[in-house]
Length: 113
Length: 113
Image (cartoon, rainbow over all chains, first blue to last red; front, side):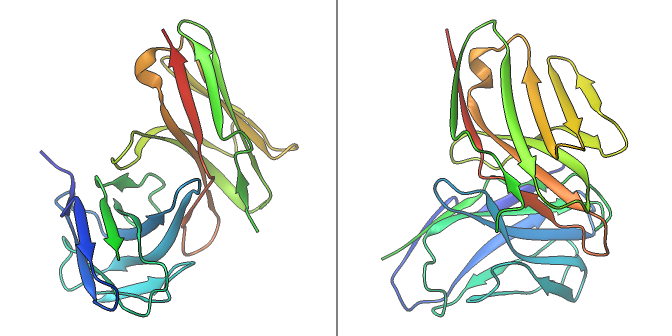
């Protein structure tokens, strides 16, 4: 049963702490993406990766970092430099960067107080 | 500058009637368009797509229309069902090496029984 998993579903952190969000896929997709959704807004691209050990900044990369050491995994770290980290974070994957359809995980709701 | 716009944040429709969700775009480099459906606290799921070489694509109750000269697309759901109640995102992808999805802000569809 292929898909994308994100954990945890809800995450709470104190301001000033770094936090890492997990994303794993078993779809054998090359490309992976991280998006952020805020109330009343569409999804905004944070980072994307088309292959292991390679990743590119999206539209709102400041305050975030990623790694892609394995094809299946694309963790996102929300650093203390991110000014408004409270949001709903979505991970997605596609066959490759030319693949039109992206498949999304269930998301992680991060609350920073 | 929003390149993909969904100007109606919400839409209410009676069960059995047609739902029409609209989307406008400004970037003429977009060549593929997708609609995603999203329930609260879940990731978006792909619904239907259309290439810029077509003006219509149909899949069961869902039809997407593309008017390239007006830079406008619409999603028709006929007949609407209560289970269709969700947020619908329009997304576009453009020509180029990094084919990132650009999302609209979404329209909340409520189908009333």
